[in-house]
Image (tube, rainbow, N blue to C red; front, top):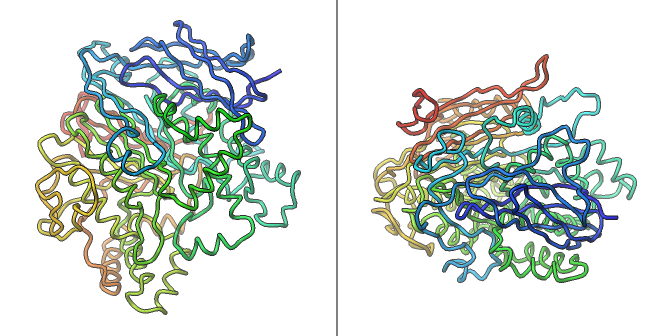
Length: 632
């Protein structure tokens, strides 16, 4: 008899119609899975099989817009969720209010000109807009209330629970959030949870996982205590998603995800030399193929809309096969060998809020002399996803697992290191630069200087012009602390031309290729929040703090002169932080107003609690959100 192994996870909720959602599950045997809602909505899907595991992504139709409805999961006629002995509230699906007038519908990412031109499998959902959303429903409930959405985000969650109850890295912020919401079902909830990388750690396994690995192979043989294949990846997702409170939370709050390095291996795709060294090992091919296969199954599919799932040839082939393992293996191997054939980036829309989630790992160009964070086709897609139909959104969110703006000294070190590795100071310095790059994890946007400059210009364009949004926020994690920084565009500073990247144009200097145009009218911010559950050594904390200091900036300028890197197109200062701890940020976006909160999980006599360490308005009118002005 088939049972429920993992899930359910509520993934996609349609903000255009408010009537459709997707629910992901893993079953113990082949079967048909049904999601049945209290309001009469529902859906069924047969499982598909990969490496002896059985999964279904159920499309739920007929939901009532602007409502919250409980649901259950059935296999055959037997209810498998919620468990009979559950002490947690019912799992629910909350839908946004339906549009009060005919909506302006954006083209799906898989249907737009850039997707047709790049020849890739579509990686983003159908986009739409609706003037209302769940963030309004906790207030007046009026259909005329301004559209709103609450977006919580973070990254880097090492999920292993301490065996003795004493967690050396402190309470897990996701578990603490789940516990708080389960205890008070009427409490304000996020409308969507953005998981910005390192959802699992393939290179840092727990004691419990190592015991499972040791039961099937010799840990003295490479890759040792790291993950070797698809089956072992399933252990990581079991560990991450089976905590009862987290399981309930993910069944109730829609989520969007993107990978970072530890989902595969530390410093994944740092450089061409790094890639050559890893590909020469006997275990790497299976690791990268299994990593991409498991990411596709456990994370990527849920990022897509039902329309894009229907149009995805890989999904169709896997579902059609009695065993989809080989189909998916071929896809993953091709995605690693020829990254331009696959797009993991995607776009989502939540009312008047647009999210563009960017793949900053698999889409890299690593050859020295051509290094880029995004290959040309990926860069063209991102540009189109950002700039297309600017009048349709009030806030632009760009999810990048790696921060765009780092502490200035660290930025300058990475830019200097990239110049050394490119040979600006000769081969001896280049060899030193490669060693330093790997030892110090110098592989953020600043380590790809041309990509950094072009991305910066893209953000300026996105925030300029008559249809500019109120805010443009880059949401990131990775660096195991939180901070806020705001760039400033010095007049006349040279930047690379936008005309070399195909896609829409906007702003007074678009395509100039000489100097940056006017500063954007939108407020542009880097919002970094990490970890959800991890730690950072005290020495690294001190280094991050020093990176913001005046002395650090002076050292950075000296390195820039040595590396002949020139100046970055923007300057920036710290607007908040750094904050260290297990934490989550939440953006509350309503109309053209924006507000930010940061909470940290702290241990206390009554158990773990979420403590608010920041409440800040990002736009002048945000008294309406917080009830008082906290503008920064």
